[in-house]
Length: 175
Image 1 (cartoon, helix red, strand yellow):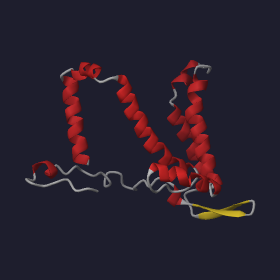
Image 2 (cartoon, rainbow, N blue to C red; image 1 turned 180 degrees about the vertical axis):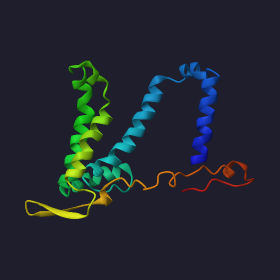
Image 3 (cartoon, helix red, strand yellow; image 1 turned 90 degrees about the vertical axis):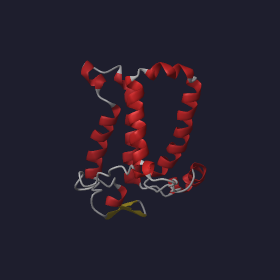
Image 4 (tube, helix red, strand yellow; image 1 turned 45 degrees about the horizontal axis):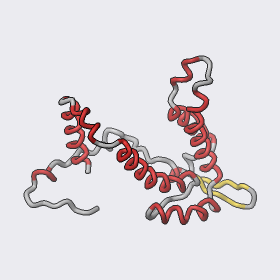
């Protein structure tokens, strides 16, 4: 996949250098928007359980079917971070035009989400496995709920394998 992505990037740069962007008028905007909406309808349901501190497994419709059960068993600490992040992400464009001083308008919502979520994660001590109580229920939090970032980023870099294009008779294997 990485090799295919690299070749696609090279083709895209070449088309840009050839000023082939004018060919985009051949594709109706409605088709492009529909394709992007379809991708969003696949990706978004798979992310909803993550907001509630749960894992999403299965097809998007299966995930949506299981969503009420996931909400019933949500992790309040993770949900708090997720909802604050979503409110910030979607609320910032509404507030942006009303802000003074004007330089605040140039802050991207994603940066504000990080500026809020990281301190909340530190305050909730998500880096260490522990339990906490809300009412009569006990909840677990810990590093398993965080994004796994390798200690050595350079060692984690994966290089593309271009032999996929040069090996005669080799077929793409279904993953």
